[in-house]
Length: 116
Image 1 (cartoon, rainbow, N blue to C red):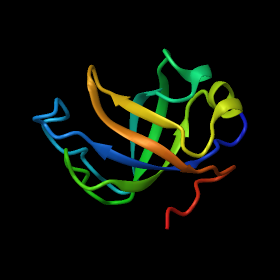
Image 2: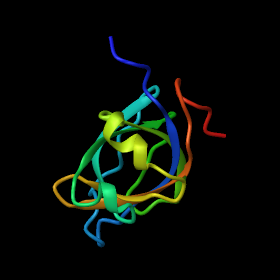
Image 3: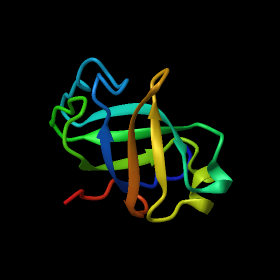
């Protein structure tokens, strides 16, 4: 088994359908893990490449164009992201098109941190 996954906190916001975002909310079940590729926009070492990201939603529907929310995030290939990940790192979320954006607001380690 690999090392424990590192979890960070990001503020994310989905684009509205009119802005080119999703047509439906991210479907939420108990502690749903939304897996989406992200591209960092203000970290040169991570630019121009997508990284698979897990975003955890705790029983909250996430509608397109809804309010920005704090969520735990983790990267599948953490070893490539972690050396350059900083608070303030911005990213776009991609589902065949740009569907939202986020900003890392807290770096964590080990188990999934509390989002409050």
